[in-house]
Image (cartoon, rainbow, N blue to C red; front, side, top):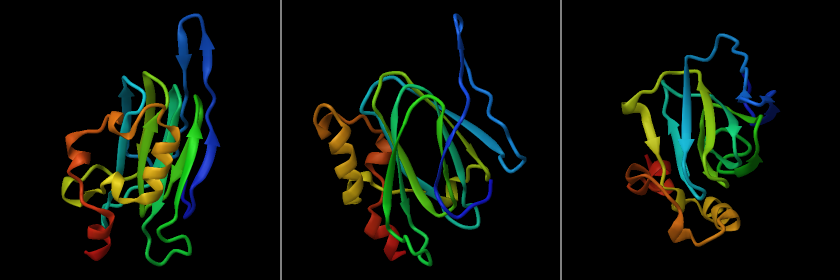
Length: 171
């Protein structure tokens, strides 16, 4: 899938007495599949992107549970530059995130399972983690959906120590 805009899609989820089965069609552009298993609610992952020449598009699919998927357009030549959007996703919902967007998600349920396909391999030297709390719209979104307080958000040390959005924009 090649596109310059975020797209909301639906994947089929087949349920029976054993559980769930989710077939995800691949079109040859995807090079890696990442699965995120999230034990608690209020788990925040992001905001992440990779810089050129290793930029990634992502196809994010919820396999189980509910999440709020968050994207911020960081393409300087885009009419939606710095626009932050969010999508509440349930089982089978997916979002296509184009290259140049910072991406993250926030779990609304315990044991949310998220699969995301990427069209470029992970490259540590091109990876950027932007501090979620440095993007006011992201703070507002997390605050709106977190059933406790922002102090209860579960976040990795790497994301806690990420650079601010302003630092990223100044480089």
